[in-house]
Length: 186
Image 1 (cartoon, one colour):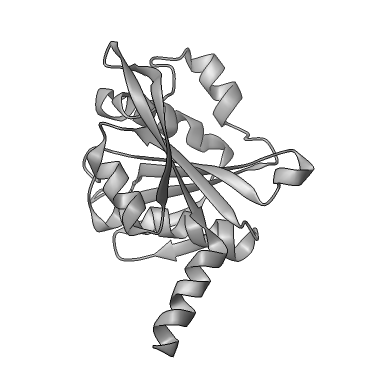
Image 2 (cartoon, rainbow, N blue to C red):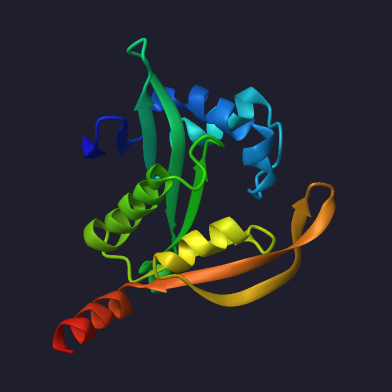
């Protein structure tokens, strides 16, 4: 099923054979730098984790067409719904894109598709994202899409060989609707 399509970008659900392209994407130094994933995971361990995501994880894949007619995965978004019954209204968003797509309209379209999936189809009321405090571009992208900073996590993870702070951002679905209603009423 295709969620979004343009002349150059298709956003769709994950296929079981996408793990090889995801492995290549998550092995790029520029991508690993901005994720909390362990770098250079063994291929077998990666395949086990990403080939068939658990039922509470929803994955969107962004791919572009190459001049040869082949497809190339340029990004992915994961929504991990919290498994506890009292937290099933929320999910953690992870977004990765190829360095060629960073800061492009395609990156924003992948994020928008993930938000539409979470809020419009899965009925989520809260979507969280965790990014490095030094990643100003990711912070700006998320803020532009209604996320607000909730906490700074000191010495959250290792980034480029040093302990780095993380930022927890959240977007509340009902607040997005309220803002739209206020704008229409004004």
